[in-house]
Amino acid sequence: MVELIVGNKGKGKTKHLLDKVNKAVKTASGNIVYLDKNTDNMFELNNKIRLINVSQYLVDNPGEFVGFVSGILSQDNDLEQIYIDCLLILAGSDEPDPIFDALRKIDKLSEKFDVDFTVVISYEEKAFPEDLKEKIILAL
Image (cartoon, rainbow, N blue to C red):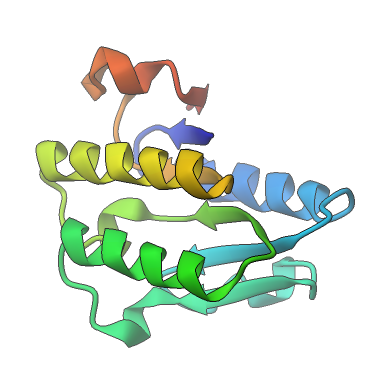
């Protein structure tokens, strides 16, 4: 399952994501990964959550980002949830079509490997195509 938290920059999406991941760790039976553009939120995350600073891994475009996520999935059979903050920055694009295609691929990976994703993306709800609008859990 893929869930989206959407809205313009500066609306508090990251705070909602941090609250969600810290609540999830209390009931999770598997591993949780948090992907971010830096380590600024390290001290706001429960220490059972693995924070990965994606900017260290030379990811330059949405296709490479999906490959990066695939690599994470391939290395952890106990992975239960992945939280992605700042998708536009992590995927190296603010063009909607490649980002939406990447979200669709992440959704397929989610189904195939039974890993839930929660993704923060700085677009307004109205910018999303219908098939992705149904995945929006919070629009700010």
